[in-house]
Image (cartoon, rainbow, N blue to C red; front, side):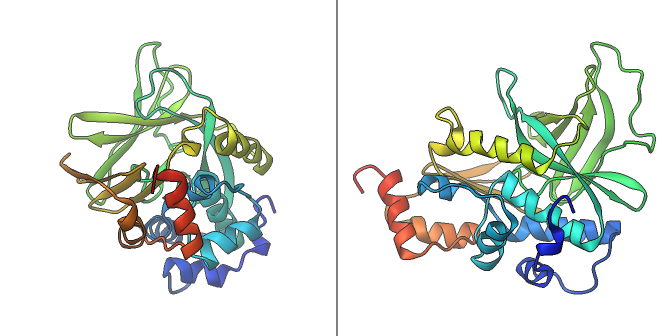
Length: 290
């Protein structure tokens, strides 16, 4: 098995998600698990802030995200999800993406997403992009007529318009070079999240990406805490000391989180409960003079 699904404690994983009932390799199950995973397991990079490595073997992922009820970032989240889907009987392929999200130049391929087959269609799945990420699968369009091939050099073609998930809208466009771009709607228009192709990536590829993202001096994830959570009606982010709660109409509330309230914010806003030693170390390394 590509994703080591046979090693997964599927009952513990489903309990972590709060999912009850039968699971089988169909779209209803895929959609339900995708939504439950995003709702239950937050995006976070706290291991890097605590000076620890980010192992990607399934035993470590189960221990952290399932048993200890922590979160993780894209590789951790999507590798765990891929193992669960494989265990249930889905065909799962790994993909790689270049994050845009307001970037002024083209970035390296450092994000992981999944291509999953269900009910005779290909689905773009991603439980690891954080606050602006998908709540549920979105059609890839491959093989079912959604992608038009008459793309001129200066034209984007919509693969699927106005895909609404909760109060949010998402879409995929295909560019002249063949790249697909996942985007979400902001109050002032569409916002590109990342670009990707259908080139298959293997678990070893994510080991290399993970090493760069979790250790390189230019990686944004080693500089400050990034904790995010998506919900059908609100997006929550804590980047550095700034907590932001954003609503679909574009309005948001922002405030700084002090050292003494950090632990409560992690629990109440993101469902992350650190032990006393980790909480103290996070404050020591992140809050100067605390």
